[in-house]
Length: 84
View 1 (cartoon, rainbow, N blue to C red):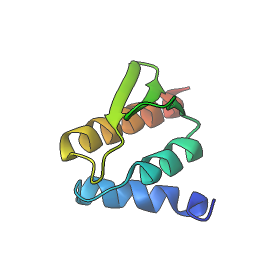
View 2 (cartoon, rainbow, N blue to C red):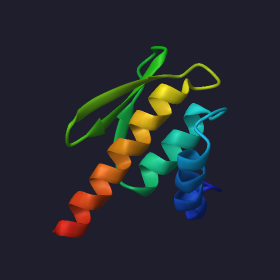
View 3 (spheres, rainbow, N blue to C red):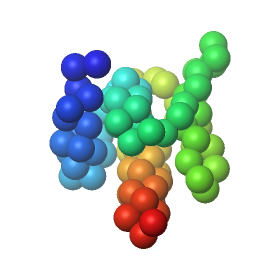
View 4 (cartoon, one colour):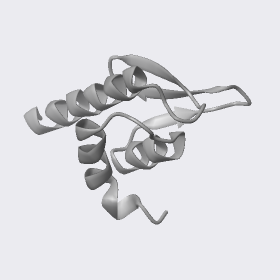
């Protein structure tokens, strides 16, 4: 995917501005950091983190509340990886 090399930049931009993001952007970040997700004909995408599954509505734009939760989970995952 074209954004794969820019996943870290996308994540930083998400931290600075949690508005107007698409579900495709979250999928790019998830793929880069090895986070699995699934969407089986529903309006939500479930991202699987060690703390549990985070369902995010696929509607555009994504509500900032969901984006902040997603970024917090990615940050938690990264801090767990650094302590290993």
